[in-house]
Amino acid sequence: GENVEQHPSTLSVQEGDSAVIKCTYSDSASNYFPWYKQELGKRPQLIIDIRSNVGEKKDQRIAVTLNKTAKHFSLHITETQPEDSAVYFCAVHLGGTGFQKLVFGTGTRLLVSP
Amino acid sequence: DTEVTQTPKHLVMGMTNKKSLKCEQHMGHRAMYWYKQKAKKPPELMFVYSYEKLSINESVPSRFSPECPNSSLLNLHLHALQPEDSALYLCASSQEASGSGGELFFGEGSRLTVL
Image (cartoon, rainbow over all chains, first blue to last red):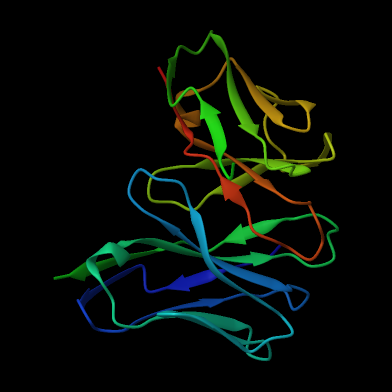
Protein backbone atom coordinates (compact mmCIF):
# COMPACT_ATOMS: atom_id res chain seq x y z
CA GLY A 1 0.00 0.00 0.00
CA GLU A 2 0.87 3.67 -0.11
CA ASN A 3 3.47 4.84 2.40
CA VAL A 4 3.48 8.55 3.28
CA GLU A 5 6.32 9.90 5.39
CA GLN A 6 6.15 13.38 6.85
CA HIS A 7 8.95 15.43 8.41
CA PRO A 8 9.59 17.00 10.78
CA SER A 9 7.22 15.72 13.46
CA THR A 10 7.55 19.00 15.38
CA LEU A 11 8.65 22.41 14.22
CA SER A 12 9.14 25.49 16.36
CA VAL A 13 9.66 28.87 14.71
CA GLN A 14 9.59 32.52 15.68
CA GLU A 15 6.79 34.70 14.39
CA GLY A 16 7.71 36.02 10.97
CA ASP A 17 9.97 33.09 10.09
CA SER A 18 9.24 30.60 7.33
CA ALA A 19 8.23 26.99 7.92
CA VAL A 20 8.68 24.06 5.57
CA ILE A 21 7.14 20.62 5.96
CA LYS A 22 7.99 17.78 3.60
CA CYS A 23 6.22 14.59 2.64
CA THR A 24 7.36 11.66 0.55
CA TYR A 25 5.16 8.98 -0.96
CA SER A 26 5.69 5.68 -2.70
CA ASP A 27 2.86 5.13 -5.21
CA SER A 28 3.64 6.74 -8.56
CA ALA A 29 -0.07 6.54 -9.48
CA SER A 30 -0.93 9.07 -6.77
CA ASN A 31 -2.44 12.15 -8.37
CA TYR A 32 -3.75 14.55 -5.72
CA PHE A 33 -1.87 15.97 -2.75
CA PRO A 34 -3.79 18.05 -0.18
CA TRP A 35 -2.60 19.61 3.06
CA TYR A 36 -4.87 19.77 6.09
CA LYS A 37 -4.52 21.93 9.19
CA GLN A 38 -5.94 20.70 12.49
CA GLU A 39 -6.03 23.08 15.41
CA LEU A 40 -6.25 21.61 18.88
CA GLY A 41 -9.68 20.08 19.43
CA LYS A 42 -10.86 21.12 15.98
CA ARG A 43 -11.62 19.43 12.69
CA PRO A 44 -9.00 19.02 9.94
CA GLN A 45 -9.45 21.71 7.29
CA LEU A 46 -7.99 21.86 3.81
CA ILE A 47 -5.53 24.72 3.42
CA ILE A 48 -4.05 24.01 -0.01
CA ASP A 49 -3.86 21.18 -2.52
CA ILE A 50 -2.00 20.36 -5.71
CA ARG A 51 -2.60 17.95 -8.56
CA SER A 52 -0.02 15.85 -10.29
CA ASN A 53 0.05 17.96 -13.45
CA VAL A 54 1.19 21.06 -11.54
CA GLY A 55 4.58 21.71 -9.95
CA GLU A 56 3.73 24.59 -7.61
CA LYS A 57 0.70 26.36 -6.22
CA LYS A 58 0.52 29.42 -4.03
CA ASP A 59 -2.20 31.00 -1.91
CA GLN A 60 -1.07 34.14 -0.07
CA ARG A 61 1.43 33.00 2.60
CA ILE A 62 1.04 29.32 1.80
CA ALA A 63 2.58 27.41 -1.09
CA VAL A 64 2.93 23.78 -2.05
CA THR A 65 5.56 22.33 -4.36
CA LEU A 66 5.46 18.90 -5.95
CA ASN A 67 8.31 16.85 -7.39
CA LYS A 68 6.72 13.84 -9.06
CA THR A 69 10.01 12.33 -10.13
CA ALA A 70 11.33 12.29 -6.59
CA LYS A 71 7.87 11.59 -5.15
CA HIS A 72 7.87 14.36 -2.62
CA PHE A 73 5.87 17.49 -1.96
CA SER A 74 6.33 20.29 0.52
CA LEU A 75 4.27 22.90 2.34
CA HIS A 76 5.82 26.34 2.68
CA ILE A 77 4.43 28.92 5.07
CA THR A 78 6.00 32.37 4.99
CA GLU A 79 5.71 35.16 7.56
CA THR A 80 4.35 32.75 10.15
CA GLN A 81 1.90 34.01 12.74
CA PRO A 82 0.89 32.53 16.13
CA GLU A 83 -2.46 31.48 14.63
CA ASP A 84 -0.56 29.19 12.26
CA SER A 85 0.20 27.00 15.29
CA ALA A 86 -1.52 23.65 14.65
CA VAL A 87 -0.89 20.14 13.43
CA TYR A 88 -0.44 19.91 9.67
CA PHE A 89 -1.15 16.70 7.78
CA CYS A 90 -0.11 16.01 4.24
CA ALA A 91 -2.20 13.48 2.35
CA VAL A 92 -1.91 11.48 -0.82
CA HIS A 93 -4.80 10.38 -2.96
CA LEU A 94 -4.39 6.89 -4.37
CA GLY A 95 -4.93 7.13 -8.09
CA GLY A 96 -6.67 4.40 -9.99
CA THR A 97 -8.95 3.35 -7.17
CA GLY A 98 -12.00 5.04 -8.63
CA PHE A 99 -12.82 6.38 -5.22
CA GLN A 100 -11.56 9.11 -2.95
CA LYS A 101 -9.01 7.31 -0.80
CA LEU A 102 -6.60 9.54 1.06
CA VAL A 103 -3.62 8.31 3.02
CA PHE A 104 -2.48 10.87 5.59
CA GLY A 105 1.05 11.57 6.68
CA THR A 106 1.96 11.30 10.36
CA GLY A 107 1.54 15.02 11.01
CA THR A 108 3.75 17.97 11.95
CA ARG A 109 3.09 19.98 15.06
CA LEU A 110 3.97 23.59 14.23
CA LEU A 111 4.47 26.03 17.07
CA VAL A 112 4.87 29.71 16.21
CA SER A 113 6.16 31.77 19.11
CA PRO A 114 5.40 35.50 19.28
CA ASP B 1 -24.34 25.69 4.58
CA THR B 2 -20.78 24.36 4.36
CA GLU B 3 -20.81 22.34 7.53
CA VAL B 4 -20.74 18.71 8.43
CA THR B 5 -22.55 18.21 11.73
CA GLN B 6 -21.80 15.31 14.04
CA THR B 7 -23.65 14.15 17.13
CA PRO B 8 -22.97 13.45 19.87
CA LYS B 9 -19.78 15.42 20.50
CA HIS B 10 -18.84 13.12 23.36
CA LEU B 11 -19.91 9.56 24.11
CA VAL B 12 -18.97 7.21 26.93
CA MET B 13 -20.09 3.63 26.62
CA GLY B 14 -19.51 0.28 28.19
CA MET B 15 -18.31 -2.72 26.23
CA THR B 16 -21.80 -4.23 26.18
CA ASN B 17 -23.64 -1.09 25.07
CA LYS B 18 -25.10 -0.29 21.66
CA LYS B 19 -24.84 3.29 20.52
CA SER B 20 -24.80 5.25 17.28
CA LEU B 21 -22.87 8.20 15.92
CA LYS B 22 -24.67 10.50 13.50
CA CYS B 23 -23.43 12.75 10.74
CA GLU B 24 -25.33 15.19 8.53
CA GLN B 25 -24.41 17.44 5.61
CA HIS B 26 -26.55 19.65 3.41
CA MET B 27 -24.01 20.58 0.77
CA GLY B 28 -25.37 18.13 -1.79
CA HIS B 29 -22.23 16.02 -1.50
CA ARG B 30 -22.59 12.49 -2.82
CA ALA B 31 -19.70 10.91 -0.92
CA MET B 32 -19.43 10.48 2.84
CA TYR B 33 -16.71 9.01 4.98
CA TRP B 34 -15.94 7.75 8.44
CA TYR B 35 -12.43 8.28 9.79
CA LYS B 36 -10.96 7.23 13.14
CA GLN B 37 -8.33 9.43 14.78
CA LYS B 38 -6.34 8.42 17.83
CA ALA B 39 -4.54 11.05 19.87
CA LYS B 40 -1.55 12.59 18.08
CA LYS B 41 -2.16 10.39 15.04
CA PRO B 42 -3.50 11.08 11.55
CA PRO B 43 -7.06 10.25 10.55
CA GLU B 44 -7.47 6.67 9.35
CA LEU B 45 -10.10 5.83 6.77
CA MET B 46 -12.78 3.38 7.89
CA PHE B 47 -15.63 3.55 5.35
CA VAL B 48 -16.55 5.37 2.15
CA TYR B 49 -20.08 5.77 0.85
CA SER B 50 -20.63 6.91 -2.70
CA TYR B 51 -24.18 7.69 -3.84
CA GLU B 52 -25.47 6.03 -0.65
CA LYS B 53 -23.70 2.76 -1.40
CA LEU B 54 -20.82 1.39 0.63
CA SER B 55 -17.78 1.62 -1.64
CA ILE B 56 -14.85 1.05 0.68
CA ASN B 57 -14.58 -0.85 3.95
CA GLU B 58 -11.01 -0.73 5.20
CA SER B 59 -11.26 -4.13 6.92
CA VAL B 60 -13.04 -2.57 9.88
CA PRO B 61 -14.23 -5.00 12.61
CA SER B 62 -17.91 -5.86 12.42
CA ARG B 63 -18.56 -4.21 15.79
CA PHE B 64 -18.62 -1.02 13.69
CA SER B 65 -21.59 -0.95 11.32
CA PRO B 66 -22.08 1.99 8.96
CA GLU B 67 -25.38 3.06 7.48
CA CYS B 68 -26.30 5.71 4.92
CA PRO B 69 -30.09 6.24 5.08
CA ASN B 70 -30.00 9.00 2.47
CA SER B 71 -27.56 11.29 0.72
CA SER B 72 -27.41 13.72 3.67
CA LEU B 73 -27.08 11.31 6.56
CA LEU B 74 -24.44 8.88 7.70
CA ASN B 75 -24.57 6.75 10.83
CA LEU B 76 -22.04 4.58 12.57
CA HIS B 77 -23.58 1.91 14.79
CA LEU B 78 -21.40 0.69 17.63
CA HIS B 79 -21.78 -2.60 19.47
CA ALA B 80 -19.54 -4.60 21.79
CA LEU B 81 -16.64 -2.17 21.44
CA GLN B 82 -13.27 -2.57 23.10
CA PRO B 83 -11.38 0.04 25.14
CA GLU B 84 -8.87 0.37 22.28
CA ASP B 85 -11.72 1.67 20.11
CA SER B 86 -11.68 4.87 22.15
CA ALA B 87 -10.86 7.64 19.68
CA LEU B 88 -12.19 10.67 17.84
CA TYR B 89 -14.52 9.57 15.05
CA LEU B 90 -14.60 12.02 12.19
CA CYS B 91 -17.24 12.16 9.51
CA ALA B 92 -16.39 13.83 6.22
CA SER B 93 -18.04 14.53 2.91
CA SER B 94 -16.92 15.45 -0.57
CA GLN B 95 -18.70 16.46 -3.73
CA GLU B 96 -18.04 13.06 -5.24
CA ALA B 97 -15.94 10.06 -4.36
CA SER B 98 -14.04 10.58 -7.59
CA GLY B 99 -10.84 8.94 -8.62
CA SER B 100 -9.23 12.34 -9.11
CA GLY B 101 -9.53 13.50 -5.51
CA GLY B 102 -11.10 16.59 -4.01
CA GLU B 103 -11.62 18.50 -0.80
CA LEU B 104 -12.91 16.63 2.21
CA PHE B 105 -15.15 18.60 4.56
CA PHE B 106 -14.78 17.22 8.07
CA GLY B 107 -17.16 17.41 10.99
CA GLU B 108 -15.88 18.32 14.46
CA GLY B 109 -15.93 14.67 15.43
CA SER B 110 -17.46 12.49 18.11
CA ARG B 111 -15.06 11.68 20.93
CA LEU B 112 -15.75 8.13 22.04
CA THR B 113 -14.59 6.58 25.30
CA VAL B 114 -15.14 2.86 25.83
CA LEU B 115 -14.94 1.72 29.43
